[in-house]
Image (tube, rainbow, N blue to C red; front, side, top):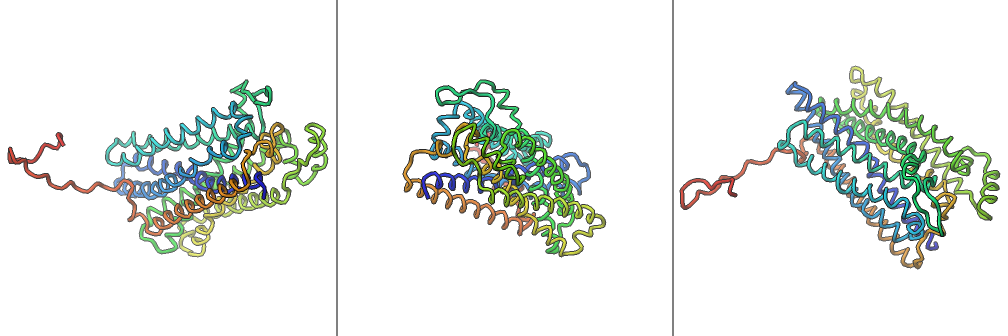
Length: 431
């Protein structure tokens, strides 16, 4: 492998692993917010208790995924300077601002709101506390938007002009409304909600399959997860199809490969526009990824639709094989989302900024040995973090709601010693 191949392998591997954290974060937090809102609004003490325990159970799984995932996110943007200095030099003036805004939102605003929500149990008014988790959800999707603004420019560069080999931003509005970014955001959001819904429904079904006594809690979670997954998985397929006309207009080679025709014509057109070269991406990889994403998406949509029908009279959870089937579905949306990412990124090769900067021109001038060491270390760390994340999630899932620590009531303080001078307890206000 040469330096370029190692740089691509490192970025592809770390991004794919990081993406598994991101899509679960985006998919799970709205469901936690819905449960918390219902808990705050209901006046039935029994229902309120169930909904609060459900909020804390799913909230703890979300916090674990977020806490470990944010470590992987710290590395991603550094790679632009470490491995892809040519990209930073060419397009840094354009997508530097979106990346900076994403960092501010994800690592400051979102983290701050989440921290206040975590430590706000029994300390904040219900309305304020619920508002915080919705702000966490809002900033999560805002963070995704800014990332896709930067990525959308690489897919379809707009709102700029090139002077002396460097891109300069000329139309910020065009950058923000880039169709390659907005349509991808809709597709991503629906895919994330599908992932979150299947995750919640699958874990709820798992507890029913094991004969849980927490039937009220997991029945509520199962219904919420299935309804969200069913609706989102239907529309994610629809929005995916809506991206085809955009690809035909902005990336004709990618569209030709996915359609299975017109590749030679697209190659000839690109040679005429940009000079000699091979402009055909890895067709086998793209088609396999696209077929896998489509097959999984349609399967999830069909199964969740049938599962919603089987919710009637608890038929879904009374027959254990169906409950285990729902549990086995948990990895499917993750696999589909990785397939979609492969199609999006591999399909624009050999360009890093489509039509303007190739991968070979963007890679840093670093030795093969340095790239090999960097690739090995980064991938090893990311795999270890992913293993830690899913080990923790699995452990808390198996233990169930009784093991939840998020929002647990603080232990009673120990009695304070008497004040030797006055023979009375010390003033806690002074302490």
